[in-house]
Length: 264
Ligand SMILES: Nc1ncnc2c1ncn2[C@@H]1O[C@H](COP(=O)(O)OP(=O)(O)OP(=O)(O)O)[C@@H](O)[C@H]1O
Ligand SMILES: [Mg+2]
Image (cartoon, rainbow, N blue to C red):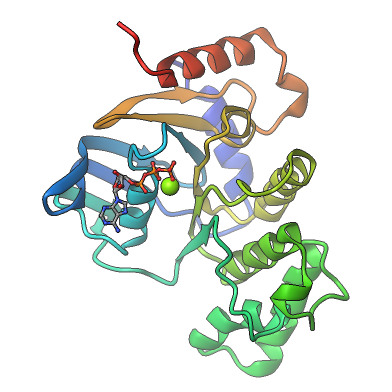
């Protein structure tokens, strides 16, 4: 397995900014006491890479993400950011969930401003930064709308703007585009790639969709019942033109095979 591609992409993405966080999981056991979901998990998201995570429903993808976020303690083993144990949520790790997590009584702009306000940024600066990010995700002119006046795709854009406005070193995404139609979803994937460009942030992106995992990821982690079934390097990350390349087709087949329930 070659990692040359990963190294090149990582270097390009981190050139202009602070390095992304290195997230490591070592011999970890995840879940709730009495209901262990994942055991003996060893996994690393390298600084600046996009690691996509696929696996069957209920295998523990969201549990993994919540543990990386520091919302759920590991039952055993270690979860670390740049070698330091993760003991709780941190402002430098942003989370984007599938479910709409916007505050319904705040405008799009006020939602994006909120984490900046919590960090103590003054009003003019946070307003300017929120407007800049809303423009970047294609929502210029909709800053004053309340979430219920926005479409599902637009609300996901606000979530993305809110997550990235805080200049996180890691972004943890749990099926963020799962509820969107195929065309909006492809648009959001492209937007995410563009929004991340130059940020250097490390991304862990959970998805049910193997094509999404292969488009966005530098590597794909395959979770199975009870643990990690493997990690694969994507031959041509973020290149739609490579969708039908023999190497991509072979990897898609390999991933689908490893995800399909064993019949014998
Ligand atoms: N709050 C909770 N309390 C107890 N058990 C939970 C809780 N949340 C999830 N679980 C259990 O942990 C296991 C893994 O759940 P998790 O949400 O991580 O799966 P997932 O891979 O994200 O699934 P999906 O693809 O359906 O989102 C499941 O068996 C689930 O029932
Ligand atoms: Mg889940």
